[in-house]
Amino acid sequence: MSVLKITDQNFTQEILKSEQVVLVDFYADWCGPCQRMSPIIDEIEQEVDNIKVGKINVDENNDLAIKYGISTIPTIVIFKKGEIKKTFVGVIDKSEIINTVKKIIE
Image: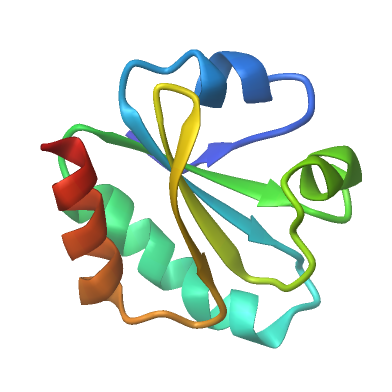
């Protein structure tokens, strides 16, 4: 699989209706910390089984950012069955994210 580009149009189907745990990276292209997190998000998608990973550009999908109260980027939100299970704000260690995802999957 690869990291999904999530938009206002596919958010409900890809995130809220997903049977898998979904890790979503809210980011912007101009954001330095987001650029540091981007390869980490890509690595997590490759290394962790049974999850879906997506990225939402907050400049292109502002309604979603507002709906989920995203005021700082990068923000990583982990959903399970459409519900938010964990939110990380800022640059986060990959192992912390992976450990959290694995606990949520269980």
